[in-house]
Image (cartoon, rainbow, N blue to C red; front, side, top):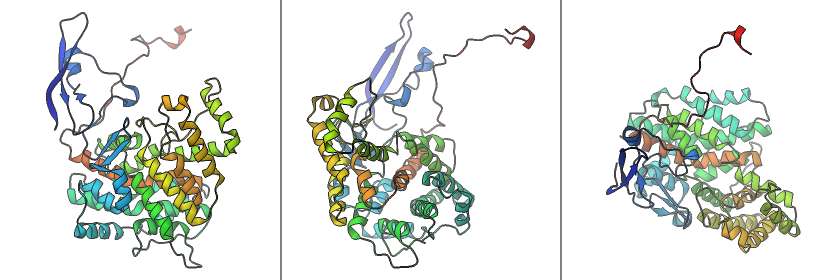
Length: 434
């Protein structure tokens, strides 16, 4: 493994003369990690880390987060710079290849994605098997997984060329799958992709357009959509990314792995947080009720949750939230919407950030706090919020999956456990049981 340092950690097992010398591995950024792989062989013990909050499951060069300082880097580039100067497909290239593309590389990559936006016509029939009110994420789990039944030419994960074509197909087709899930839900005709549009424009077109009249994509909304996708493109080893890597460690094909990631993202504690923020703001109702609501959050006996504040990793202001707040104003201003929920959100942020209770606990607004308001203003139903997250995160998943496949240190995922069940016991015949 790269980054191995000369320092080490020595662990001694109490009551014995056994000890284990664990090398410390230092990455480019962040804290050093102790290599515990020989701990069981040396001492006969495992480590215990529920949720893997203190365990590095892999080596990665893709995304770096400093939660204490509020830093997010894609391949070393600050998210703020990419959000201001880049496009989503350019960020896709960066995540996959490690460097920003030159003009020729950018053009070839975009063409490589756009030529795969169509879905096989038989896949269109899959949608008829779902109920009209099926959740878009249920549809996406099924349809993305089913892609492996159509593309046998790109199933060899050890062939770089086949991995490349799979990546193009997934990045290109997931927006079509998501947009069609919405169209099926509302009973409108499916709109085929238009390769003369940008990635974000094409998604908005497939989502909003109908055959009966022309649809012109608003450039302000297209840029906001592109920005949302950039901010959600990758986020280190979160639950869904870890799911993709764990599934991929078995040698599963990339379509199955991304379907597994979508299923993981569907959980309300992961991909559904912005929907929960909207619900919370609607329940508060008015700015005059904020202080009462925050008082209930502080009261442990009331079990009231403050949604959109705090993060498992960030113990500072989520850098994506600052960008999202600015975008929120731009979108609502362009649409001429005076959304009381935005006023409520801003007042709530102001009050919470001046309250020692929340400041001391480092409960700062995260990216979900504003994204739900933006998506609602753009006409997306709440059921589509997580689906949009999946569209954005597909490139991160496929980049992490490919990095894992190429990692010579990668082994099939096999976490251990602390067994607390019954000790060994003998079978009792039925007639003798009480």
